[in-house]
Image 1 (cartoon, rainbow, N blue to C red):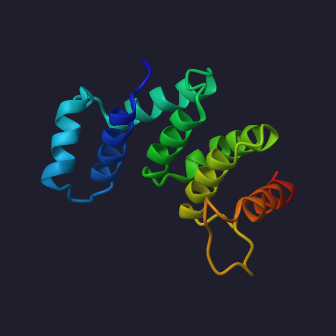
Image 2: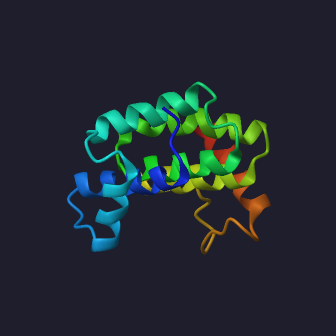
Length: 141
């Protein structure tokens, strides 16, 4: 099943709720309207991972949403997936998807950003992000 943008948003809220985060009325409404509320978080995770791996999300904007949603799970078991996708996105020079994967890895305490950086941005630090992602993969493969 290919998820829509709204369903990726709902998935993120479902993952956050599974991690014990209380959801707002708005977030609960998004979940209720998504058609995903009866799926267990692991089922959603599996669907999204398989969708990415099988090329279901050919549009980079869809992949950014997929990676963002998965980043809300906060499971270190996803690190190998994030690394594999980072390598692919770097090869294709997809700066937005690379950045979202960097955020996902950073949220899992992976040393993805150079320690000398004062912050990060998807918009005006593209070259720094690509450099850091390449260096991370060199050291962590």
